[in-house]
Image (cartoon, rainbow, N blue to C red; front, side, top):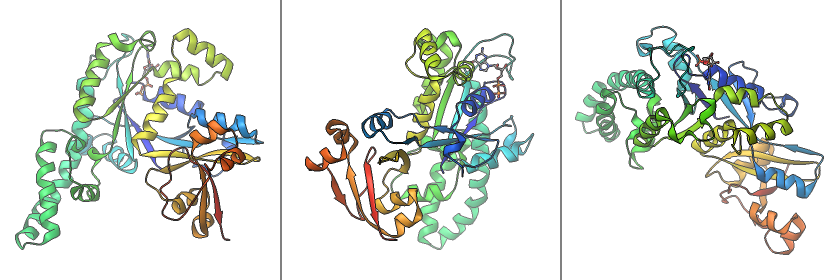
Length: 365
Ligand code: GDP
């Protein structure tokens, strides 16, 4: 499954956030085949639509879909030079599909900041610089070879060279490749380079408890926002310390606690949803009397591939997908009513599954 890696300088609240994720964690009983890796935290993806479907169908069991966060420790200045756990850190980032970059936006005299003062701009720059230097290293290694090949008018080499020429100066400035716009022809070439700074990023502003209901006055947060805007990245505001407390409460206590804080939902829920979006993920549902369940697929996937999310036999033996859009299911209240209203569609191999589809797959075994 796709995973988002949690990175950040020391003492910004990464472990606290990761603890919250693990404590809020998905019930292991539902996911017996899930990875057992202490650095991976599996959370259920909050989804009101699943609750509504369960209300309508009243199944024996309701199973949310999940999302994985990976804890990536060990960034220090000089990581790109292999300092500290530098190499391991970079290798771990290479393996994740998106980056959640935790930035300290809370002032607390008792908690030392690695560079002396709380400064989101410096923190972000430190990490971005290490990643950019690592990318620059791999781009430079390729550059001379590609340039030689391009001299003989090799078409692939020429295209690669154009991309490298676009990327190199940005990395030399210590900036991330994701700031650049690429043409549809260039995109696959960029992808083939497996650069760290081309991965999508979500900035996680870790603010003080008293700031979560109304974070607008937080000057650190504003700095993070402006950097994110420049890069075309998103920002999620949380208080890691609060999230850790929330994660230990039952539903009723949680509701009361959130009301006291003056917020509608845990910051962790926002973080999960934003990470999910960032990775281009979406949800479809299966709704039977035994089980109502949410499943994750990648936007753009066609029906057979999506069926494969459930079981590979569903993909190989795919015949068709009987689909009801969530909005129709919600409005009409049952599969039967949707069928009678002509809202149940029978879709074939070329159907591109939509977020919220309630699907029954027909297949040969
Ligand atoms: P890491 O080094 O990035 O993993 O940081 P930790 O999660 O260990 O947090 C470092 C220190 O900051 C710990 O003492 C935490 O209790 C504290 N901390 C984390 N998040 C918050 C927060 O939202 N508010 C305050 N006041 N302290 C926090």
